[in-house]
Figure 1 (tube, rainbow, N blue to C red):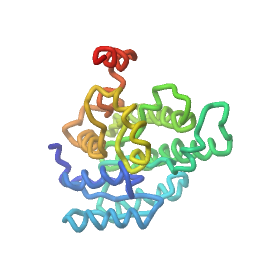
Figure 2 (cartoon, rainbow, N blue to C red):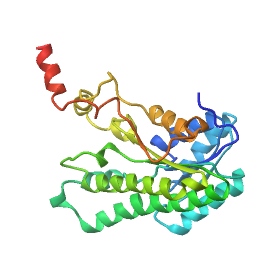
Figure 3 (cartoon, rainbow, N blue to C red):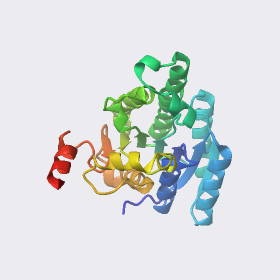
Figure 4 (cartoon, one colour):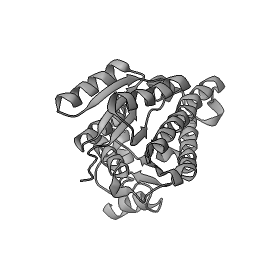
Length: 267
């Protein structure tokens, strides 16, 4: 297991879902963690659970679309936890109303698209800006971005979300390039179908249809993402930078006709 003793991390979007799972895993591996979220009560509840388990954790409210709020988050992490080694830029605008309204290109609402970009792209860029600057001042560290396989694939829905995640992939490479000589690495994790609270709200038939395209015989779980982030944040990954790691059960690593061929073979 990759060890993170003595490291300090900040995780955005940490009140629930992948962010909370990752914050918990980083703490289990020895890191002190600042849990940052727009949902301050949720972040504090998650931090309290980590403290109950004997690890160091604190919580801070952050609106990543607001530059002052992001700057204050980084400053609070350093002040309360004694430094910064790991930035997990995970927060995104994924509220059910926004996802429901995110359809095809012909149905884009310009005002909503601007909001998605403000949070997902500019907010993530601000997290990287202040996070990478602090890491460089401290002698190095890593920024781990959460992207999505939607950034690489065409679809009939989630047009705005996909575009924002593709932009984050580009930001990751820019951070890796611009801060590498300062000892700062940048990587991203690209989840496939992960059974978060939101994914569980999708119908069982729809979930099973997605699973048929995996090479592995199960869905991904939040801990699959958390374990990958923990490895990439550790010194075991010290020579890895500028890449995106797919955590998808092999969903994108086969010929498009595989599912049909499997069905024919079973028949």
